[in-house]
Image (cartoon, rainbow, N blue to C red; front, side, top):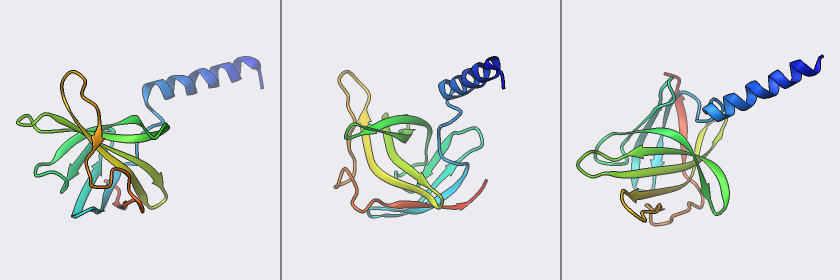
Length: 137
């Protein structure tokens, strides 16, 4: 194959990565328990947006982002709190064949100097909870 073909392929892969094409969990519905919250439902939509039910008193919407945990880059789902209480909720996860393994959950308020802090009693889970893929949308 020609050099131009390889250059084009590398360029397309780089553009896809920059645009976020290679990120985010697979579309579908994931269910499970996290801590004392035993009826979590996470829906990943075809457009990549996410909806979290059962963790907060209201449903939260979010998107896929990159995050880090103890210096290790990981995938994250970041949800926005309701208008009445502005905050961000971040699920750091790893994906496997059966669903999502939640490594940590952090939250942060808006404002100067705001940082993510652990939300659950154990900021990093051991063993980590799992949200099992229930179905595709």
